[in-house]
Length: 69
Image (cartoon, rainbow, N blue to C red; front, side, top):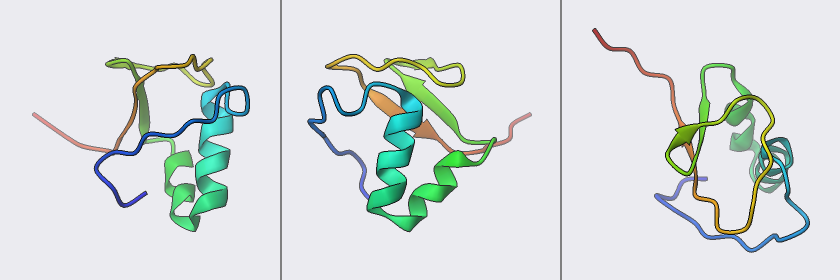
């Protein structure tokens, strides 16, 4: 949280997006913002549906709410 990017090595410990969010939330209370329904999780440049399985080497991003027209 609070960085443009971060690489973590949690092989075997974090295997789903829900586990990743819980891990981030435990590290930093600002992680609670990631549970808001308007925040989208992106895995390997594609929006991830609900709780998704993570694989080693996946690139993960959180997309904040935005509007457009």
